[in-house]
Length: 340
Image 1: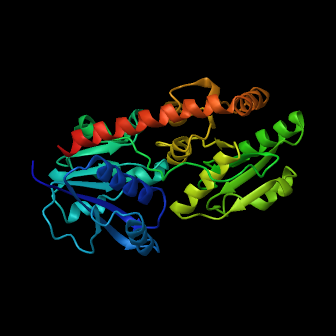
Image 2 (image 1 turned 90 degrees about the horizontal axis):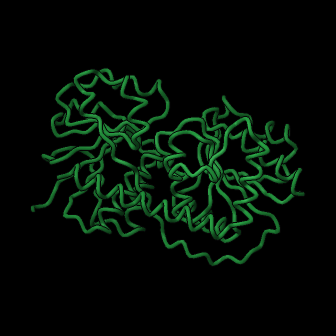
Image 3 (image 1 turned 120 degrees about the vertical axis):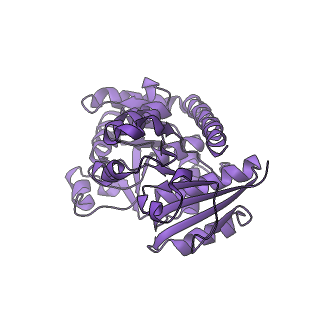
């Protein structure tokens, strides 16, 4: 089979979650030695394009990925993530529109898609069910799943144990939907019951018109038990995950809704046990294992689950590693089907 020419498109170059998806796919193409020319096109540079190129160079992806400034090739397959504008300049019959956004107001474009597009891709089966009513009747049969994959550098840990306390980590946007306050409540209750055993690490962009993080930390009296880190480059996120794993830490997410849960999947790839709000995306990532899921109105039970994870750390770590490997296999099977 000849070389496949594949184009991925996104509206903004920001080095956020979508760019992470694009680069993860590039790593997967490289590791599977697929015969693919993989181009990426951004409509607007929002400060991330140079960092995207630097990542490609620094991680040995130059022979796999090419960031193009104009679209002047006839591609075999086009993937456009939440960017329907691409349909004005490419062949719709070769184009998959990928819907990844959990924010319903940002999905209104689904009703405007032409019937001759190749298909609509979503990152999980549950997300397919949640957006199917937003898709026109003639496109419902074209909605299919392409799960996200996760690439990590070697997750071997070089750090010695330096914390007397167990780190609880959250990485991602800090806004109302991500519901970080529930993590704070669980954190406080755990320390009240088990004697100041935890330290909290929050890393990500605070949406200030929705969340006043400093006031929130003062409300729960945990300013001196919390480390806040601004958004990190992907390589630095890996360093943070390696460090938290070396300190036998736990990743928590209380996000109310997710299309997939990429930051959770990344933590699992580093064999970090997770404790997650029981939404469908989170449940799918941990294969519906209730030991890693919590509900909003059962803080005491949640504290008990967190205690069990920490006390049985190696077992919990091994379980999430197994789930992570299953996720990688699912992505590659689906991806090969779609491009062929």
